[in-house]
Length: 411
Image (cartoon, rainbow, N blue to C red; front, side, top):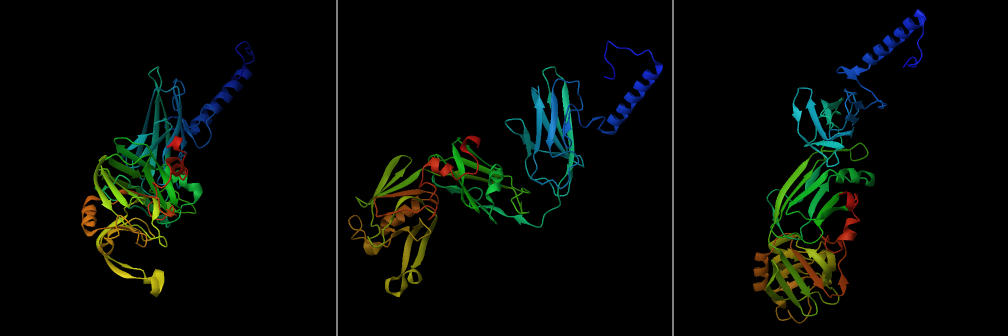
């Protein structure tokens, strides 16, 4: 106010001056208005867009992207604040008037488009907040996305749509460039896994270019898995941006679990909770022991050739045709048929580190397994080294979650 309620000036000049000042204020306010209402009100900061209806109980303020912002990443979400709102809605439209689909976050503080926005395009976001008085306040922000950058990072999944994998299979995502540590949480927050039935799990950074997801315990048999990566246009450090979004739909197969005990030289094969076969094995001899730990079938080859001359040299190396091979480690440990050791299987370890089985059992087992089926080997002289294969299950869930860039409680 220009004067207090209890004071009235009797001088006409003062009244004229007060009217002139008020007119000036109204003029300035009108100059700052957009869409018929003031752009900044009630202490809003420059760059934000607040309610155009200050007389409503509810209030809404868009905090990002800022009004008239340029060079906004195509991955942009709409962030906002509301007060006294019982209902909140967000609308995003292109300059052509096309509505962009999206999802409101659970905390009702942000809204994410279903996919990356178009490069070098203008959009208008409108946030509506309705109070318990039935009145609605709106906030609006118009912004322009950046031109398509020259430096983009490819984002890919090891698994594709409609794959059927074992209960130990991690979801594997690879990046075409190392992601700096201080950007990994932003990347991970754009990676969503949903399952039917629901199961607790976490992402874990295996390396700067690779991230895996596993549940707390083995997947439930026949689980449907969907994961979506909204990484298109997302800043990934040092002037690089995500090249693409990605979605994958797949299924977990039956629960097939293999357990090998060095003490008994036997493999127990369990399917959906029932033991379906016990197989005699021969593991690695003392000079080349098999690894103890939980591994996963990485690949399967009906026929292959093991050639170790380069690795072991001309004296110890060998070249052998192999049937029914199932890779377990990057270092060369497999389950495979070994007809030459069938006399020792079940009693003596003679392999170079592989799990040897008979031709008959090798063929049967090969027909049962899928990529992602787990095998646990117990009681050998060497422990499995994490990273030597898909060793996601070779540690506790708590330790695995420590490799996430986002705390488990916030996932």
